[in-house]
Image (cartoon, rainbow, N blue to C red; front, side, top):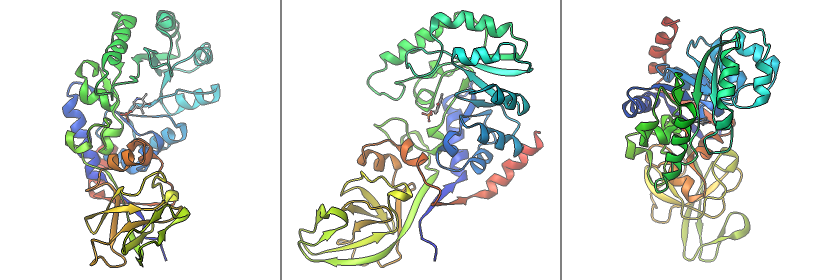
Length: 373
Ligand SMILES: *Cc1c(COP(=O)(O)O)cnc(C)c1O
């Protein structure tokens, strides 16, 4: 028998969230970020639901080629660029755009025989992760402009603190460094992730790069997605597969860290950390059972977790349980477990089956996509 755990992926929520991103950045083109298997939501149906985006961005070359083979004609940007000259050849073959962020990549481009590469020069404006130092900028532009393999140059940077509600001084510093660095260089620019798309119109420019918001979650720890009219795309659900009655003093699960202080009724849910539920979620973390609020008790194990049914005596075995998603923001579970929604979403393991909702939308849009070929 199949385990009852499933992740529902609501494609209509994806298209809704894309329209919200457009409302926030009406003048910018949208590069939908679908790295990490579309943040755990599954690549191709997600891309289909987002077919009205102006482009896609991801890091994984194989996934980018998979999009091309599926018929997507959009600009597709590789966010870390390429790692070898063999990969460069694949970029040309599949017309993939690429970030250039270091001297090694520049060297591989020098003398390369390709044509019509679309390059995004990444500038390190203060995050200190990827990108050329501002002092290198004009030399890099000069070198790429005179390279016959390069047909289009765009400029980009990435913000370290656009999601910080209190400290936006650093955001402004980075923006200022970017503007001073590029001066009047007349090239398309891409700066904003979800947080900057929502909060900083001054960073919208030519292309915004929203990721998380498209999946319905908020990049700000102070808010959930509903504050921005976003709808959760993934709902992780399972069922109660056992029920136990505890006496005072009985324990639940490994290590006995949870001990009943009174007679209790508990339900065992088929979902554990091997299903992507965070092991660090403590007793008290919210769970929905039959759409009613309950709480996690004891340690999450690999395949199961326990919930408190003492106040819900009518809940029978096989009752549906929502771990996060519709009615229970993933942000809330992430916060309880000391992490962020990004990590929970993109860590969804392959053993959890995806159940795609509203695929009729997908068919419409697939048609749009194929017609525009
Ligand atoms: C992941 C990523 C994004 C999207 O970030 P979100 O916070 O999910 O919107 C944008 N740009 C780059 C370079 C990224 O790596």
